Length: 539
Image (cartoon, rainbow, N blue to C red; front, side):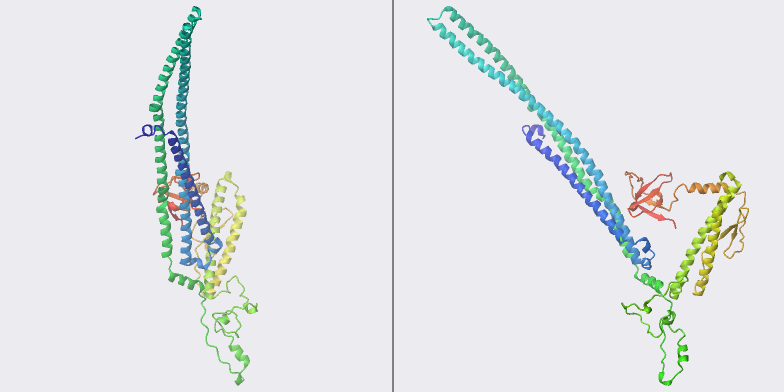
């Protein structure tokens, strides 16, 4: 069944139905656009929420950050950030695959429908024009036939009139005959116009309009089919990211299961243990016996508990839960912070000293590495003067040497304090270099003794090694690698496509926006969704 056969007389109905179909497509596109706005706002609010509750950089060194409950909370915030990225991806895909595509298709079928309606209107106007010509010829034939009847009656009347002359009678008959001839021509013209109109009307109702109606039917069915595909995409777009959303939710679940209350308690003990002994019993002072106050006072000079170790007033009792007084008193003044951390309890002091030693050793090793690099550069300049002046490095070598000596002094100082605090003086191994007048560098151990390492062999390709170092600095050094869990088309500007299972180098970590910068082996760089890959950073 088709519209051309069944709805041959329903032009207005078909026009109204097709217009209503186009309006439905427009309404659906508007609906999807509003849905994408909701998704984008939802993702933005989730990102802001994660950012609001995420620890600031200055807070990441707080003791609480070592607790598994805090770490799991940070993992949840990261997973929520990734989840927000998936909501943004849903909005982007819906906009591209539904809104933009349907809007373009809508413009095409609007123009097509307009063309078909113009054809129908043109055919109708042609039929109406032919009908007007038919009606005009019919009226003319009717008018001329009446004139024939009137002329015939006049001729007969003149013939019967006894007063009329023969010439009058002859004239009346000729007039009647002429009118009859004109009427016959009008009759033939009317018959021809009638035949023409019937033929065009048959063509209009059985060929032209059914063909146009069938074209409109095909257009409407294609519109419905395209709209149905848009309905399916509305669901498939979200289904496509469901596995990744599921992984985000699994990550949140895993963060909850990773919380270890026993380990958190051990961390609190490790961070807060003072190392003090519990206070002993107070001695009874019998003032009735007239004891020597001087000797009594001197006997109290021996530390018997935390009160003496912390420099507190011995006349005051030691309380675990001290009352907070709003009134400012000298006793409420905190101990002054000192460089050797003597203001801290013994256990905490040892930890802080050890931490400070590790920081100094890392900084010292950095200076040593820079010293080695300057030594190599100086050797290259001396062997290849066209590359640079060795004297230009003197100030940098001098500054590096001063830094190494300064850090050595600090290292020895903190090792001494650590030994006094009862800790082990194990520190990171390092080596320092000094430079002689010939530009060669000597290797020394921390105590200043010459090591077994000898001056590098001049036959080695120092120039090539130096050149390679500078070539490596042209590109950003990868900080890790990642493996794609899903395909990513990389259609947007600045992104890069990847296939499931592909291994890429990580150039820049996720800054909190859900994107990670990566590089292929061929040098291509771009951004990918962080939640699409598993990342392994270098130690």
